[in-house]
Length: 375
Image (cartoon, rainbow, N blue to C red):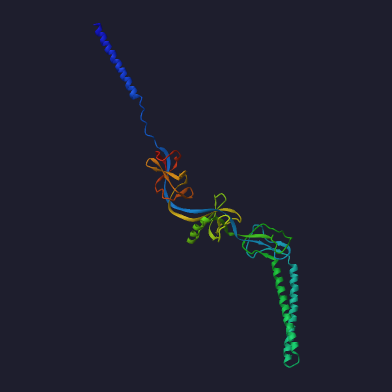
């Protein structure tokens, strides 16, 4: 009886041990397995759709403003500068009096020359009357041929003297006119270079003032000789637009067009000069001012454009990340000219309507899951 109970107790203990072992094995085999990871969430990004638009192609260069006309007003006679009849910075018109030189000495010489001319004209008139009488007398034999010939030569001499006197009078009249200095062009007078009371010398390089025609203004700039073909093609189609910006390329100063292309390339720099004219520059372009010239060489018609910030640079060239479903797709491109904050794509690497990633691309690779949160 006792052994029977012991036998049952042993069976119960064995069953319990087997259950504990089975439970341990189950926990070891199933509970220790890693739980499957949830699907990764897409990286939040901002995307912009590719669009088509016309993109101008510019050639940038550093230029210098040159006036259409700039004249240094100098005296053509020697004398005392008696008056200066302009204000510095004043606008003057062509023919306007700007200075006067003391002309009293020249006027006295002119009066003297006129007196000599009158005297010699009277002598000539008397000699001509004598010649006429000798011609009448020789017909009746009352004078000799030699006397007639001598009188004819005397008349020619007096005619030469009168012509010389007349030239002297005209020369002094011109000299007197030079004492009144007028502006040869319409423009702005610069700072006065000589004060009244100074003795000025004719032909001096110093001059009295510099007059500059401000409008229209011209800008001379140089471009690489490699751009010569494109520029010639643009000129053959018509007027070529040139934009003049300030030194920092922030403010547009004036808009003009190409006026002339130089006839030879500078072999020392490999560039060629162009001149652009700006008709309505106002006072924004000053002579010898440095400006940034932008020549519009061509226009790309209906070309795909993307924000410049979307273009990245790698070892194999430029590329963008395009949203393909819920993943990022790396697309190699050929970037073209920029306009504002967008850049043209030249190789048909993108199509209109495709979305390129502009923000969040630094965390992505080709095929990375993405989630567009803003457009």
